[in-house]
Image (tube, rainbow, N blue to C red; front, side, top):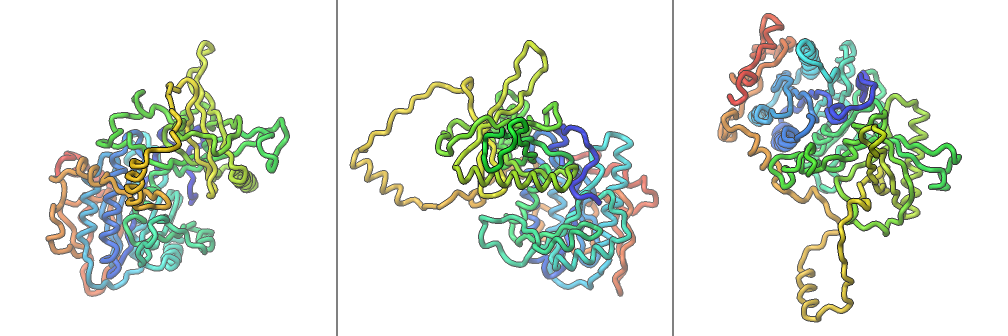
Length: 526
């Protein structure tokens, strides 16, 4: 298994830079923990997919499948395309909500392994089926196991159970332990990697271990990481520094420093979401955000997009009104094609650059390589950027205005002494406001999730509009209108004293599993 690797080695395309690999999510949460986690998990999944299914432009998620493991493994959702499939995913989430929340199960140690093997078999058969009809842009998948059990024990269980399983098609294998605590400080609601994860990650199956809090915000942030470009085939940006920029990291004048960086979005553009204030401005519309650094990096004719630093600026010398567009983040590259020495040297230089900029209170002005036709009669336009340091190992990049874009503006000087009565009234009003030391977007909600859900949900496609009024479904009791799995399920480990129930997907021939389901025949049907 090769975490973070894909098969392509050529220059990135726009689709490659945006699209993520197929993802298999296995929810491994037994009773009674399920009662505490169910509501938060389902809400987080609903919120995430309302975004992922709504984003315009190239699909950021290709395929998604969901399994549930309690006393036995069960395919809740076979592999489906994410984009444009919110109603079907919403039905899957409703299935999760109706799972039994009380009682106890007799632990079946093989169920988790069988879920992984069943998901792998389903993906392989899906891949063979698709390649006969269209070009397949993904050849490996990422497996995430969300568990309430101690993460290290689950990792050991998987390593032992899967030692004879072919994991060549697995790009990344991740175990995420949901902690029982409730998030106290929303300011840092990010997944936390286990500090001792190095011991487990170097074993044969390369299983990553993380922990997240049992709250909606933390789970949302974890799932949103799936929208990031995580490809490591090659670095995306070359940041070129002249020799005279920084004395602490100086190099010969004829050999400028090249920092190899990966690019990451800071925000989702509202213009990519239907029904928002900026949704009328499409990425392919010249009236909108017609080009961004992220797009330019993917459209560059060279292997890497180049940013040439041309001068330094005082941090206090930049007016915020001169920057435009969405910011982007630069990180030291994690490209697997570079050797370890080069990766380490590159990160050290990146660290030194961040440290030097903070110490000097400087920004960098950089020129992007021109993009445009290669005709000699045309001079392609360039874009300029300011690069801002932070106290993390990242640089913030924002486009900055040039002379051609500027409009005339007048800024009259502020009089020194305002009118006394007006000053008292305004200060009294300001004193009544609650003062926050920082702006935390996680504390501000725009009701975007519910807005998107209402646009893309199909009420006639839901299993039960008022699922809460129904008795919870017991595990193993399948709904008659659930989507069929696309492969024959693996044999389940029988529960003592109880008849084993097979999913409704069973067929005598594997070809039968590729017949279109009722959803695929008519997407408007429930």
